[in-house]
Length: 76
Ligand SMILES: [Zn+2]
Image (cartoon, rainbow, N blue to C red; front, top):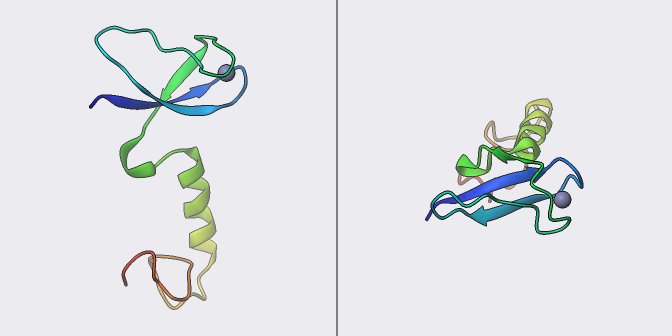
């Protein structure tokens, strides 16, 4: 299913939309087409990048792969 993640340049809302054919997507909130497509692979959005920064600074964690002490989220 061609579901893409978009970011609205007008209201700064992130949303996912199913794109069929050459449909022109628009923001579901403010209806503008002033939006741009995000890279949605595996959640590497702008929010994900911020999470990575947080993880990198948490060097005292027992797990190198995540910032959670229990490592329940990353399986290590
Ligand atoms: Zn919008």
